[in-house]
Image 1 (tube, rainbow, N blue to C red):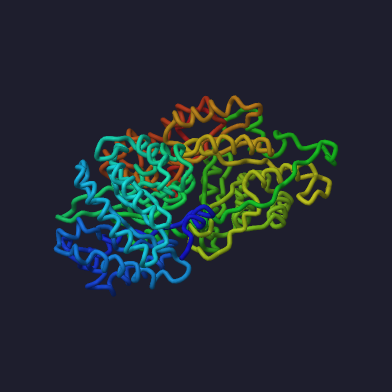
Image 2: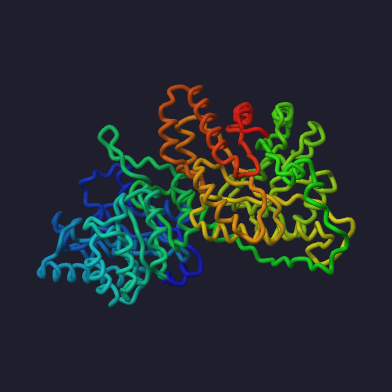
Length: 613
């Protein structure tokens, strides 16, 4: 048996997805007793477990959610309770092998909102003892109580489970208001359950989709130190042609799974509507997050070790000069191509140059994708077009030696403007088996660049002349954990950051709150606001639901929803972007306007309407 508690404390675990959804998709009628299939169709149950194991789940759950005497009696199967539960464990154990944990799924006996009588309470205790006894005797690694709405029933079940000596997790289900069926808030329930010594871990599951689960998680995590599980539905259910459908695609679901882990959840999985495809993508994302370790400390240079005076910011580049003088900067973001043909990219850069953009931002493998080297793309733009590039440089793909060599080599070749970012883990992109290096994060690499600007390399050696790199960093005004984001922002400044570029801003008030908060630090740097012109209501929904750190207010969605044609959507998106820029212009150093789907004409149309530069 695998110790689930030790595993989950060491690194976040991915649980499997829905069993009922999979059975329904394979032709099993909804009025069938799904638990009995452990006896009548074991091959089908094993095949579903196998799919989740192949998807990479760390924990699979037995097909026993309703396998208690009270619920089975509705099908005339009460006398088969022990046999059904034992068979369920055996089926899961065969597919789990030696590396995947098997947790017993145990659901409530009470209906939502039902209050048990004294007699019913005794029946509940007997039912749980019979089911959990069969499950533990068959060899489960843990008990997971799921979709409970009554905390008293959950505590009773946990008290029974504690007698059998396996880890016990208790998951409550909440509605879209963050409340149970009895009207108690998530905060009240988790605070109560946190005091129960029979529960080794807590969680929320079912009820709502990932968006509401994320909001609830942010409120309840500070109330407990116990490992926390999050297993939402794949979005809220919708009735389509008489069928209940869950419309959240795996990409959408996975973006929230990443947020759950970033907030502090130790286990993530799926409930109604989720499939092995959802779990496969979650595994790639979560394993990437948990595997990112920045294990090299970069020491700051000492004042007495400087070999030559650092170049003033105003003299590092034309872009740097405008920042130093307090003039508004306007840049356009253009992705390097996936092919070796740079012609289209260069033409876009030329158009931006002619239209008066100050610089071209060149992302470095966004979302762990592979494109033409951003450094080569930046050099081609600089040398062939004449406009300054801002080279994004991420820490994912190279070790410390390679990163330092690139910073020095890029500067020697004529690149002065850098934007240093940590980067997305490889498992999020098209090459999930690639290795992420992450010797450093953005803070560490900022310190390396700062040291180079003072004639000191990462190994402590000296050289002369030093580099004159303009050091930029990223900022996320809408981060879920804003305290952590602000603290990292301050550390980036301390390490030597000289300007920042934010993620796309759709909520001006959120940006202004962020700027007010960081504006009180002992050192401040210019902040360039990221701007994304929306092109359609679908594009707005995507940005809101699937891009972490980006908040699209409801009023923006409402405006985009009124657009009937592609051109209307384009013009409304441009108008919204201009309005945002006008509101934040007095507080930012300029704007980085993205070219949505490579359409630089949209970005340039936004630039033409910006306040005087």
